[in-house]
Length: 64
Image (cartoon, rainbow, N blue to C red; front, top):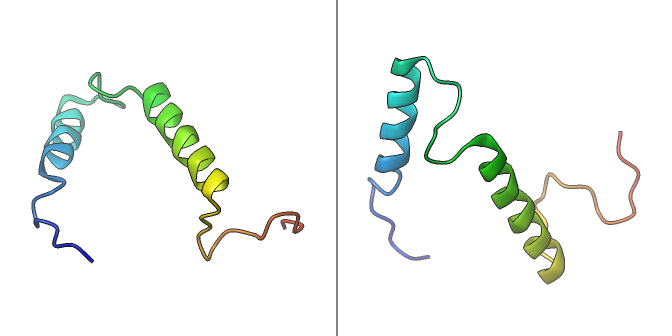
């Protein structure tokens, strides 16, 4: 495991605080649609390379 600086999410946290203080529901820097697009891309990559999180159902398994 590589060392990660403790302030690695500092900029993201600062933007969240800025948005909250301004009463904004999303950041103009990364709008919600953009964040969803990134997550869909990451999910597609994980599926393609076979990475699954323990909380995810196995492929083909019925979900509750």
